[in-house]
Figure 1 (cartoon, rainbow over the protein chains, first blue to last red):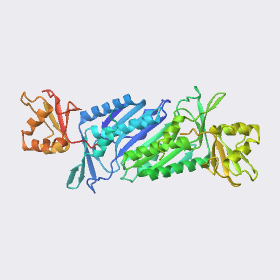
Figure 2 (cartoon, one colour):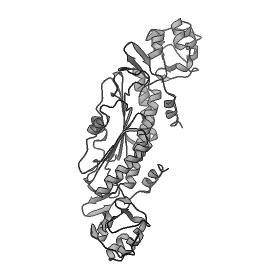
Figure 3 (cartoon, rainbow over the protein chains, first blue to last red):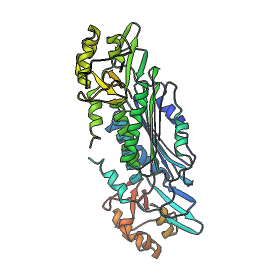
Figure 4 (cartoon, each protein chain N blue to C red):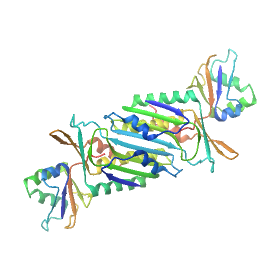
Length: 150
Length: 150
Length: 83
Length: 83
């Protein structure tokens, strides 16, 4: 039940180990890793800066994790989100959910990713030499999040 | 687009690295790790043996991966399934799907796990001293697989 | 024709595999099951309950009406429990 | 009252934050937005299009009719694009 917002990269294997060690009730572990894609909005851009609102990101992500724990029977849940400068191929977000039931682990994972994309205060700035461009929010992300509303 | 059926444990981090290295089109990586749970059918059992039908497991898993690649826009797909003796907490199956689109990665992952549970010829034998018990197939697994039929 | 048994069915039949030469009127999976059940009480115990028997012909799942031929590899096993 | 701006809104206003003391009749988020828009052309440019402005009061998302008080931390930012 951990949320970390950090500049540094993360170690997926170490986080997996930490979340599952010593618990033999877990049958399913679903790991979502978000990577920086080639910059669709600024072709040729080589650098991306992820700005965030420090206190609020932590708070919003913790609220999402709390809701996931309430809605699904999870044994463990971890969210790590990076900020700062990132390049294509870099890891940007890690979500791990563990449960006795695989569907709970899948659903909680997708819920967390869909919602953090629409709720966690991060903004992507793509840069290509002199050109700078703030990435625009996608309606498809709002729609993805909306399906979890109840 | 790899399928491996093996006795040895697998290295999730190394497989993730292999599947994503050098590809900056990938935005989403979904990893499913199945672990051996405490043996529900044989409380107190300390050992489990996973029997399989060697040629057919490989063949069936490859057919499932081919279907996943046809149905979803995946950049990569890996399935590793172990056989032999396993203890609670051991890793048993690894499914990794990568895509530009996270929902494709999630759906293909769940499809592969649901179907391999009902199609791949593996059988679990739980042992507790003198007591041996073949684990029975679950109707819920058939139902989970059925939702992907079309 | 090579016949394989797995898991509980292997234990019930008592052998992991056998090579059989059924008569010419054994043309389908269903024919083969009926013929194998007559071979021994063990075969009968293993194959009697169709709900607990899955069949593969040459490593693909097969239905009762599927044809079988001399060179085939036919496997019988319980519903699978991997993953 | 501490007011924060992020991303494109920060660039448009030209400062990352400011401490303001609006008049007593500024009671809600909507009142505050209207009052801030009058402070400069930069504020107006940043806050004019409500569809592009999200508001948080004390680090929780807030609606236009939500009350604001002197000790609050109010943040304005565009729709988020993390993950």
